[in-house]
Length: 153
Image (cartoon, rainbow, N blue to C red; front, side, top):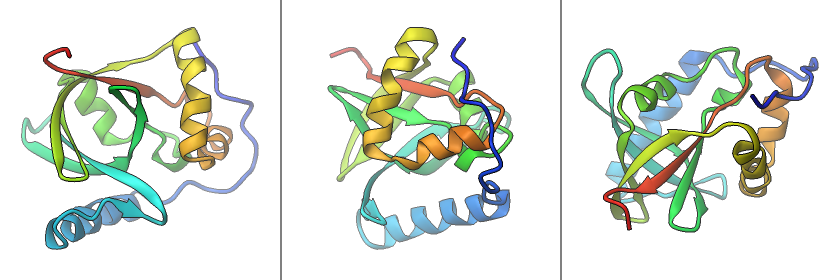
């Protein structure tokens, strides 16, 4: 299994309430603005998934990391000690919908491991360099999901 770099005292992860508030605010602004796809200069996508415990439909904004026809999702939670709630949703219900620039597509998410995951980190860093810092903040192994078009293209 891929290990995160040795943790260092590099600061704290954002509080959970702040992450939740950001999520709700960003989804609200996206709907109000008819497709807000950018935050602080970074492209965002909106993931529609089923809640692992509630079985309810959930929509969350995440950084958009394209990799060919695939989309990569990094469950960093800003380097928090625990995986974000959406991680558990994708593990239990891997069929999702990704909305990017007004286009909605169906995907199937799967967790990466080992050499495959190691090869994906440079792609993730190119899209969002702070992921390296997040990996230093936490002792957990930050998951990367590969989302492939479904039905398969």
